[in-house]
Length: 333
Image (tube, helix red, strand yellow):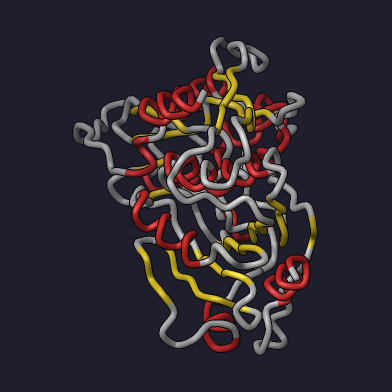
């Protein structure tokens, strides 16, 4: 159900939205002990070893010899960061008072978005801004374009009513999620419930619950139901790319189950495992993915990116047009 994801989000995802408060770092713990603690925590609780085809024991053999008691804190941090980045997961982070590690999901693919190209060539200068949405008509008024850059938790019924009512007579809608790095998952439900024709199971979720890499809870269905006073059931295209991450990927995998939504652009950056974390013995904090998101047929591999239904690439050599947006317009005409 919808509540399954929201409960998991409240319990696991808060660390990605707000900086947690931790006690000051403890430096009396040996560097080897700190490294081993982190490796073991990930080994027991990380949810995507098999999907990512990562041999975590081999990773230990590679990075553990680089750590010895007495090395600098900066050196220890760098070794741990390189170890974590072998997972290629933007929800895997290490934080100290002097640095923070992260995996750059944008490096997974080419740049597929330029807002200036859209404002210069597709939208009027006085385009609308309704809460988190930037929007206006394209294709001589026959199609609505909606830019949604972040799941900031501020999607509400009033701005959705205004936006959807404005484009009620169009042939179709384009919702641009490119370079949307995620945020608050409840925004996904508020948006998708305006497009679904009936109650739909859109994906499944399960949590890592044992020390073996294959230990998981039973899967739970995530459901989206129609809601809202203004709804849109004509064709909709969601634009996605490698920068579409976390809540953006949740929205993309859910859209696969909605019959009137088509995904167009590039594969998303993943981020379908909700993160949880803790504190190392030396006081540094960490987090990593502890859940899996499954397709309707039980496949967890979309963690490596939700593929588009129609693949289109943006050509940065010509900044007078956006090939992905053009393809969406042609699709809806």
